[in-house]
Image (tube, rainbow, N blue to C red; front, side, top):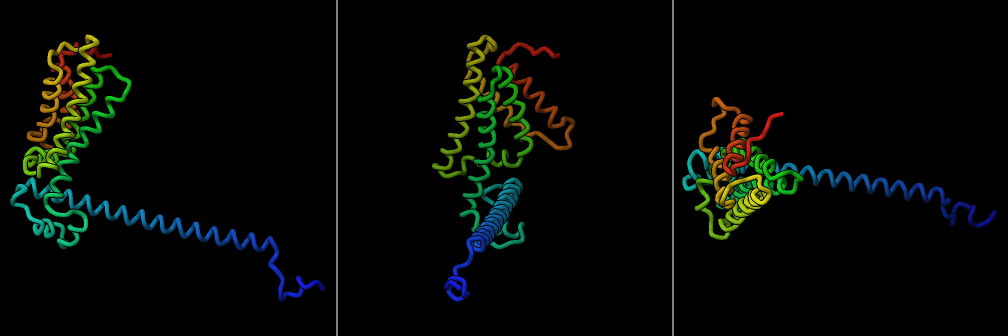
Length: 239
């Protein structure tokens, strides 16, 4: 028989080579998928821990104030070690900045999203005021800490937050200016109107109570109507 058929120096048939290669590839892909899943799970757990630390820190800042709150108090509230907290945040100042940044970034993201929609200025103002009111209610503690402790931030971090606030005011002002140009609004100072609307909405955090007579939906609706009156938009007809 030919040398290739005596079993000693034979090369495996092409079919077996392909099957073997495919098996290795499938095994490798499964392994890669498994590693990717493990990595994603670790990221999810890390994010969950970070959110829990942030939320608990916000509660303590609301209860005791930023100056009186310590990392030791936070560790006790979480039943964990300070080392576990430092794995996610560099310290108390880092926690405060993360809380304030989130509270402001939510409103900026809303304004940017609404500004890109194909809607008339009156509807955009209504949407921003309405949805911003719900953001304030849903994140009441975060907003409260941001309003109370902004001046506590170091100058570089405070400048970043002020930049975000100015971004929100700028977007809302441009929307109001567009409404004035169209003849939809009669307000004389668009910048002042934007500041007034923003201030009205943000102040909800100081008086809203979950057990109060007004629901979040009621407050959001009334806030939107007030915002439209502030820009002197004509009353909207109900269909």
